[in-house]
Image: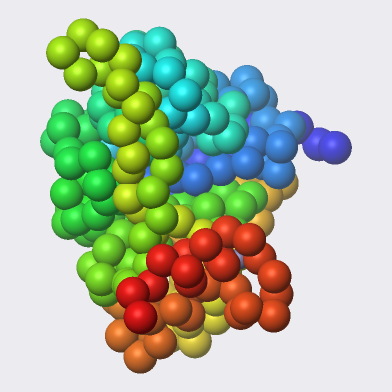
Length: 257
Ligand SMILES: [Zn+2]
């Protein structure tokens, strides 16, 4: 496959509509984007070039919660090589949630990464909540809305009735202790409904970045269309019972009767 140059990546990101000077939350599968010149570092350089010095780049750096989280050393879990490369770069801030951390670079990085409550990990007072507050954009690069954490923010704002707790190791008074953290967890496959909701209103830009299909939308649009649906059908993001999805069944079982 053809290697995509830095210049071409920058062009593609601009054409898609990434705003210079804005806040940009990126979820990415590098395998879908590449090959690009410079690998993941080349992709990061292109994203930061389009954002410029006034812009702030944000990526999820979530971890497995199986050991005490140290934002300076704990590797990400399932976030992809681009995010894993990003947080290790000089001058990149990383938030301190033991399972749901994010990394950010740019003038608003410290604000986005400041401390937050343990639960919910992706509520209004969290990195995704701050991206939303700051009217940031969400870029899905070679991934679908299943990976769009901002939809968990919509669930928190809509106060969905399901909540599942997962164990997470945290340090309390110098001792590693397992705590349970409640979150709106499920398989997230039905987050893909957001494609049609956003497209129907012309709120999603789609194009190519590298070799990947890219989707770009405003965090506020993602939240507003999802909250509107959740108000009518609070369980819309859970697989139907007949689908026999264990994760969504656990979420359904948590709904108070
Ligand atoms: Zn499911």
